[in-house]
Length: 179
Image (cartoon, rainbow, N blue to C red; front, side, top):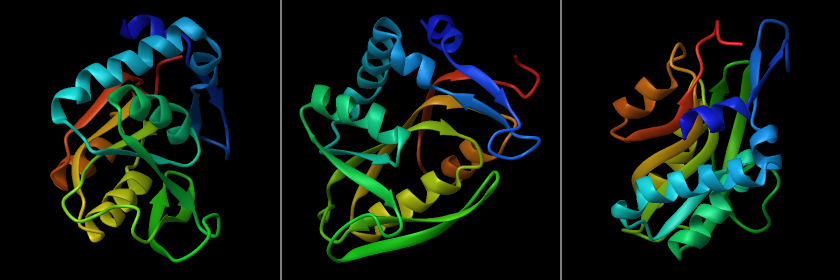
């Protein structure tokens, strides 16, 4: 399974800044069999955790998070970049591999005690996922796991999230030297 998924993800050198080896999941999304395989694998892994909701990080986390939520029979909660959500929001700043940002969620989108699965396309430094976890926990939610398509194990993301007490699962890994 992982080999097929991994083969559909390409490396784009020097994007968005020089020196970054960007892992582009759009080839996976464009391939119906590969995309289905990825969604089924994420659902299979996290169904036993019985989440009440799936939270996805803008933007590629939406692509994977919505079908995972649908298959699990739960709602989807968007975690968006600053200024994109209407109404009252809560936010958290974070550092990326190549910059900084802020994520926000609508106030009340997570209720006290709700079990939340976090989904995104890739874990690198873990900054955006850590910010999302802080937001979910700040609203009283319990993060039951974090699912990703790609893990970049040479960067500290997985370890950072695990140090926060969150189990991390990725469908495939890429080392810096991988094509």
